[in-house]
Length: 230
Image (cartoon, rainbow, N blue to C red; front, top):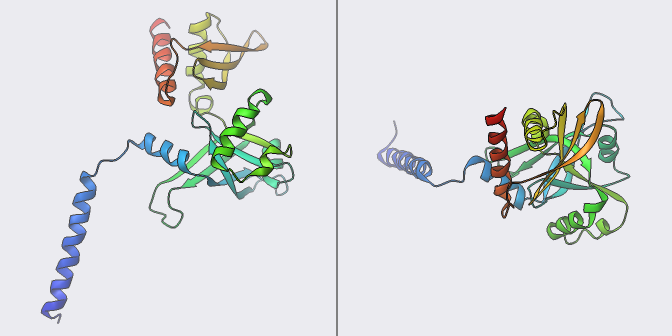
């Protein structure tokens, strides 16, 4: 039979647990999407999974350094000699797992899935500068022994029809498909197809995006306008 001190200690633990629970329920938190963006913005290392070329049908995992560009797209600097680089060149499908606290599996863990694409040479210096800002000791990035990859925007995976609709509304061209290639403060570029021909189109925003979140807002506005006239 428990003595009075044990019962008192148990009740104290229960009360503390309830106090903690009640406090956390009322604690102000970022909206989920902002929490994810914040985690990615401040993180520098993640777990990259690619499809193994040496052992077909099996995933290949590796720890990699990464940084995000101005629009939140993860950038991974990889050596041409690395196995994951060869995997991504052969098959760009991959995922990047980032944990807020690697020692706590109950804390926020984000997995980004997409296609890894080489950075366009015209953007290489800007991308390299953004990467070096997060990894100042990565002197090897300045040497031409690597490829920098973006994990491609989810617009192409989850909203391909929406992108096509925006392009059709903006250009009056009934394109058969449209894949977003890049985004900046003034608009975005797509690769589109029409009557068997493939070409690139620049789709301007209705106004300049002054903050990262404005990009999403502008795209939603363009989609809503396109649906009204569809």
